Structures are given as structure tokens and as C-alpha cells.
Length: 87
Length: 271
Image 1 (cartoon, each protein chain N blue to C red):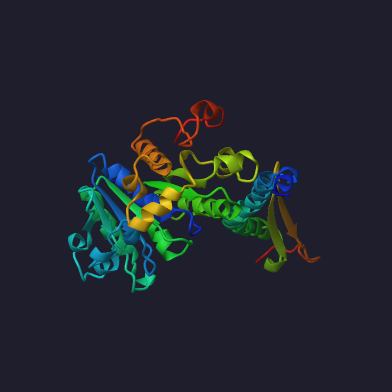
Image 2 (cartoon, each protein chain N blue to C red):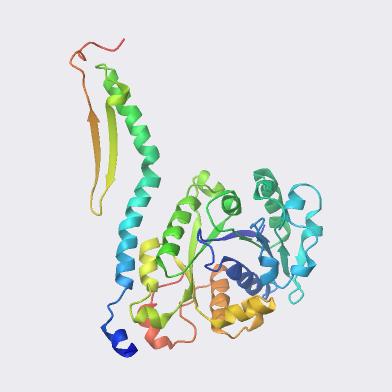
């Protein structure tokens, strides 16, 4: 019985390896880049507010780390009277 | 000036204290002066593993609080005269460890010892961050198991950001010590292999300590495994790791296995 189970069982180490690789890619991104994203957000906001008025709360910057490429998503809501320059 | 080593892991129970004691004794066996410092305030165990539990009078917290001199708190090993232990407090709280106090103690130890080994507590809080703060070299103790590898990855991140070396823009030297390794289970595919862990954590390998009864036996009698039975497989692994810490280049092997077979798997160079 035991011998049969031993031979029919699939290997578990590859699963451990894969799960760790996926998990750690995310955790490293979350820990390492939180500062970077905050800085980017501040600087983007500063650059835009030179030319138009934007609501501080309507600017979102997100970093997503993939296996091959990472993406930086910047989402800014522009109000219709934004053409007026900031004071 | 001596070298400061932190033995750390994040996860508890992976072998930090065993490794601190074993490496300390292995380094001291060569005549170099070694002190092993227990940073686990409130849950000290290095004294017990090293067989000095009945000789503790003063501890690290007493020294930091100015209640005892450093020389009063240091305990000399009964077997090796160049090996010393600085115990942690068992009754005080870890908040008694101040950053300035730890800096002063490590600074003083560096002057009179060749090696200062800081045995970190588990976790990522005050005790652990203070233990790693002044390190020149870090040894990350890891078991071939998912939760240990994850926690080691987190600790590597802290070593690269929260230490004095990192804050000065220098590179922290980090080494992986893989403990409780079972080559048969790894070969069957039921345990992460050495190369899996190395690939995931990507820091150089200091040694592989096999899972062994000898570790438990040594702690039962209160002796570092490198002194209890210096020819046992884990002892040989720790002696090799100590030589690598001194800068020697040795091929990595799992003690007790044939070299020819292992050459294929562990052909990589040590740290």
C-alpha cells in the first residue's frame, strides 16, 4: 500500500518553487516600490499643476510588476475648466 | 577590528541559534577570539545550547542599562578559551535594547574580538533589526521549505535597507546557510533543492547543513554541534562554512554523500 502511494505520488517541490517565485515577485514589488510610486505621484502632480488645475485626489499612480515587463499606470482626471492656469 | 556577523532568518526554528553556536565554536577552534551575542531578549536560548545556562550572572540588557560592565557579562566557554558568550536577558523586555546601547556594546566587542556573531531573534521587529544593524556580513539561515524561504527573502530586503552599511550606500555581504537539508527528499522531488533556493533568493551559498540527529544530541548536552561531535555531518558542514567565512574557497558538498554524484549538482563556487 505504502509503496504504491510512494510511486504514484507526484512531486511537490516544483509546486513550492513556482508558488514562491510568483509570490516573491509581488512581495518584492510591493515593499521596494511603495516609496518610488509616492515620489512619482508627487512629481507628476507638480508637473501637471504648472499647466492646469487638477484635483490632488484625482491622480492615481500604480506600478504593476510582471515576470517580463512592469507597467506604470497613471490615471488623471481633468476637470472641464482645467484650462485656467493654477494660481 | 573584528568582523561583525549577524545570523538571521525571519522565521523561527530554522537553526539560527544552533548555527551561531556551531560557527562560533568552529571559528574559535582556530585560536581566533570569538564572541556570540544573544539578541533574543526575553527568550534567550544561546546560553542553553552552549551549555552555559548556569553561569549567567549579567546580560546584554544589564550592560546597556549600565548595571554591569561588559567584562562582567561575558562568559568564557569551558571547552574553548577563545570562545565567549554574551547572554540576552530572560526577564526584561526587548524595549530595553536601545540603538545607542547596542552600538556601544558592538563597538567595544569589535575592538577585542576577531569575530562578533549576533544571534538574531525571529521576526522583523526591534530585536532583529538591532541585531543586524551593525553587521559587516549577514548569514541568512533558511530551511528548504516555502515559509522559511519567503521570510528569508523579506529579511534580505531589510538587510539591504535597514542596516548601517545599507544606509551608507554600501553593499551588505549576504550568505545563505541552508539547514535541515535532506538530499534524498530533494532528489525525490519532495523538498526544494539547493539550486531552487539559490535561484529564488539569489545570494551566494555559505554551506548546506544536513538534517541530522546530531544537532539535537548536541543541544541536549549543551555543546555546539562542532564541539559535541566534530566528525558528524553537520559539524563538518559548519567547519567548512567557517572556513568560507574566513575567505577560503571550498567546493560545496552535502557531508555524508559521495562527491562524484554531488559534483554535478553543487559544482557552483561557494560565496
